[in-house]
Image (cartoon, rainbow, N blue to C red):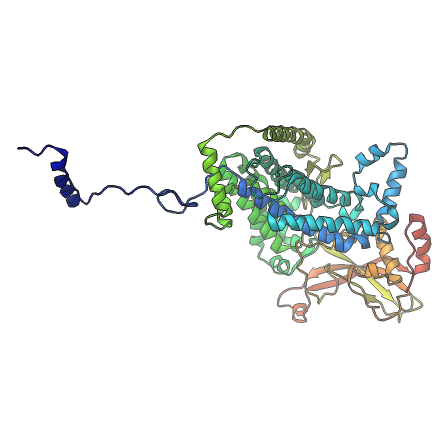
Amino acid sequence: MRPDGPTMAAPEESLRRRKTGYSHPEPESPPVPGRDPAGSPAHLHAGTFWLTRIVLLKALAFVYFVAFLVAFHQNKQLIGDRGLLPCRVFLKNFQQYFQDKTSWEVFSYMPTILWLTDWSDTNSTLDSLALLGLGISSFVLITGCANMLLMAALWGLYMSLVNVGHVWYSFGWESQLLETGFLGIFLCPLWTLSRLPQHTPTSRIVLWGFRWLIFRIMLGAGLIKIRGDRCWRDLTCMDFHYETQPVPNPVAYYLHHSPWWFHRFETLSNHFIELLVPFFLFLGRRACIIHGALQILFQAILIVSGNLSFLNWLTMVPSLACFDDATLGFLFPSGPGSLKDRVLQMQREIRGARPKPRFGSVVRRAANVSLGILLAWLSVPVVLNLLSSRQVMNTHFNSLHIVNTYGAFGSITKERTEVILQGTASPNASAPDAVWEDYEFKCKPGDPSRRPCLISPYHYRLDWLMWFAAFQTYEHNDWILHLAGKLLASDAEALSLLAHNPFASRPPPRWVRGEHYRYKFSRPGGRHAAEGKWWVRKRIGAYFPPLSLEELRPYFRDRGWPLPQPL
């Protein structure tokens, strides 16, 4: 009788399985979060930008924090009630110039919260704006989450300071921070405070807004160089840059003394990064990632080689938009419940089902499309400027600083000059035995034996303006005479901007003058370096003649500046 029934076949089948090593599969266990079905660690998919938004917000918040910290420490001395260029005087002059305009027209020409405040105590107003900005930026920096209201508040607060900051806020990175901050508003949901707002994915339009920004920054910087100083075309600019940049650091001293061939390589590399690499943005995901990595590396090198305020840190921010979650995943810890794990789950949900459109999502999509149209419209004059042989850099075409032109070091100074402020207690400034003593600034070169400072991303605004003043005249920089008057009165606010006051424990000087010097780095291993000197200086002549406080009083009255009272 043949065993063809199921009961009789079972033992034979079981024996066959044991011989072949085959067994029934065990029931499948549910997938472990953060791991793929095979049990190995899961990887984030390309094409989403949840983690990118967190990194972008934190980076932008860091730059905002530094900018508001600088404002809190220096605004009172520079644009406060008794500042070198009081913003109250600036606002009154602006109001008088537009006296035939309505309040709204005046505000639209120069939007700032200070129009709505009491000008009798601008110091308190300036401090309040800076402290509020510090508080909001600290929250975003620590948590990595924000909504449109918080980011709009940061943008409005800083724009209020920039628009009344006069020459102290005239640098290109001020407009760059405002444009970057404006884009940052649209990264976030309107109300929700969550690092991963599930119903508000990062807008591709906003990401391309950031990419368009870094494209214009770098290409503008490259074109202004090629069209500007001849040394950029004959590859010799880096022979001078490290020594003549606004505020060198110790690394710049050694880089300046690099071999000639290294300086040629630096210049060629600069042209490659600024003129060719920006086009990688439009060549697909991998090329875009390479672009972002190269730009961040380039900015890191610039940070190491000079004190360029928070400019290079800020320029890194839009470069982060080149990276998606799969690229940035290594920055975040793994494990169940982690941000990385939650993003992976969201990616699976998006791939598995098509979410139903929500009213808020539709409104947000319309807002993002409107943003794209606005950026395209405002980019027209900027693109025309890029294509023009008369390109201008660091200019804004609207009062909100939304889409601007950029560029840096279109011309390179071939020698470094410095204005050294000196005071004397001698009753006769012309006496041969008069002893003149130097005031030292926080960071700019002065005492040849003082090591160059290292302060980036912090920024001493007065030191930067002193660099510009050195290759102009004091008639172009009337604030320097205001500073001289304050030094004659030993004004505490003004002295807080300096590193050394030679009259700290004595009566104020009777005379203050400005001397013009030529500075060069000492040669490593040379006589001056052996004496501990970083710089070698030689007097050129007088920058402004000896001045007394009485001589400056009429000058102060004509400009509406408060008269300094000697201690």
